[in-house]
Length: 190
Image (cartoon, rainbow, N blue to C red; front, side, top):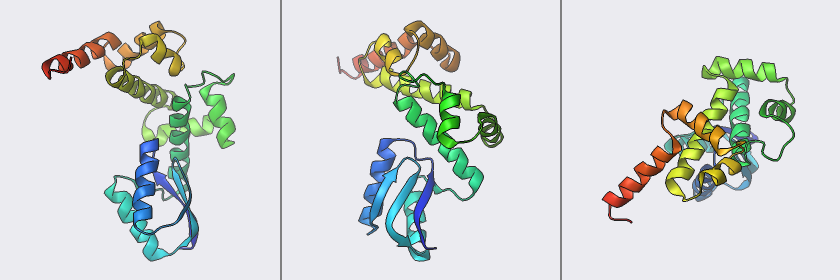
């Protein structure tokens, strides 16, 4: 194979980076850099090493990106996850579409068309779904107020967050919190 970089499908968070780094290093691979969606090795990897990497990734639920369209799709998803982690444009004068187009140096319409073809939904819908997943985690695993969560995730107000949350999940954020509290009460963790 003779490549020093591989692209990985489904690598979307810091836990993914940590786990993949740990498993590859345990297998004797020397990693120069690892970030969302890609690993760069210190030296080229041959076919047997690539097979080892594929087996490790497969065991963790990941895959190597095999073609240009998949690679571009993974780049879009990785950008969106980073965008969400950084507050969905809270500190940016640009929109998601403008930032994504600039980052990938491709017209947004082309990115949107590719994404829709491969995922069956728009980039914006994907962004909203993933953003709401992060909000759900905050509601369940933290005691942050809805105002704090709204600010961290780049919502204009808690009301906007609540409306979008209800539209996507069918529940109000307060209902999710209530379920969390009920579970704690039932488990004696109050």
